[in-house]
Length: 232
Image 1: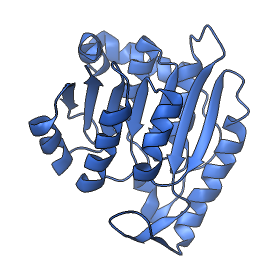
Image 2: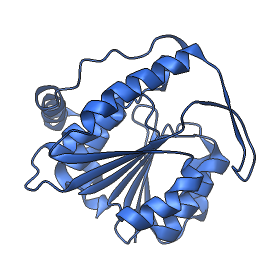
Image 3: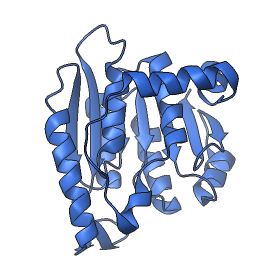
Image 4: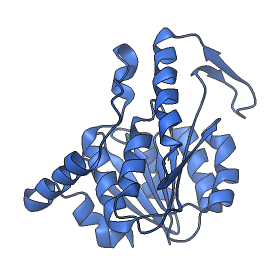
């Protein structure tokens, strides 16, 4: 149960902090790709939030993980590295999804999507592709990239892979997050844990605490804020 791990994965004081940070620094050998510069640079996940996820995966060892929002695949790589550690078998799977460009306009039903030209985003895609081309060769964690919108892909993917853990870091618009959560709620198995990133000041956080049923919900103010949920 998530509540059994909650204090340890979000506690960065004293001994646990040293242990957790040492684990990440010493055990995870990230690929030597630079990150994009300029306006898109801040879109990478915060280190504190990555540590929280790393500590959860290290303790719980989920076999099948979904990442919504590949971006430069920095967190994709991070997740794959953590999933590899302590693995006693070779059938762990990490699925990551994202769109092929910077969205300019999208209809409410997501049937029509327009992408804008952006040189900075072109750099993001190049870095993403370079990382994914190496990560997909990993013999310990099977990394699968699917391209498309979360609200379109989620129902099918959850039914196909039966995820243990879902990391939501794609769109942060409350209405899209609610739609994504509804897909997860309808299709995820009991015990599935979901982490929504960048939740500080996000209306979704308040809405999900007020209206959700059959889920245990937690919030941490660390980094950019995260909502964690477990389906009961």
